Length: 280
Image (cartoon, rainbow, N blue to C red; front, side, top):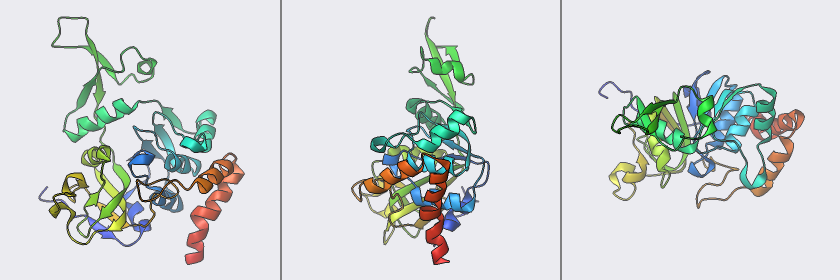
């Protein structure tokens, strides 16, 4: 920790995504955990490629956008879905055509693997997978006899998951690189397991989040963050806690446009590339 480079608080989301390299293992939270939607659009503008996108709780808009834009070569999630707005059309198109590698997982398996890395352990035991078909497709998840039982008590060993990058959107951020995530405790575990932690945040907090006894327990410390940036409505069009709901009109339009390659390309032009061309 003595030689660690302090986190930087950046001025623009385009600088933030420079910390994501082609081929990185990237973990994003579920939509309810602070979806980094504007950062995902910045990754598309950057032209990120061959990302290994992993999530325990399924991601929706963020995952579908990155997949459709050709940023993802490997996906490991329980599923990708747009919730009330239907299935994730780009995920379905890419997965069914074999344009990326897809591996199934479960939410508890993901959290167990993250917890192992968070605690500095090589693996984590888990029971809930016993008897499921998923073990047939994940040979690296080893089933062993419980060493503390007399026999007949198998248990699954899940390898630790230490991502290259964790990317999320928080409610508050300060000048020190701390980010408050509220009840999204799984984001805290992800951050403590990752090599690099980058985040956008909704509101700028004057002062030090870690000095506030009410906010500190739910704050991802600057000890773990690599870079942060203030981005208002950074989760849009995804809902973000009590700050704002899903933009139902936009999500409905996205789901319709993303059904075809041509429609998705038009969506990127209008909502991902065009606003930044106009500002240039």
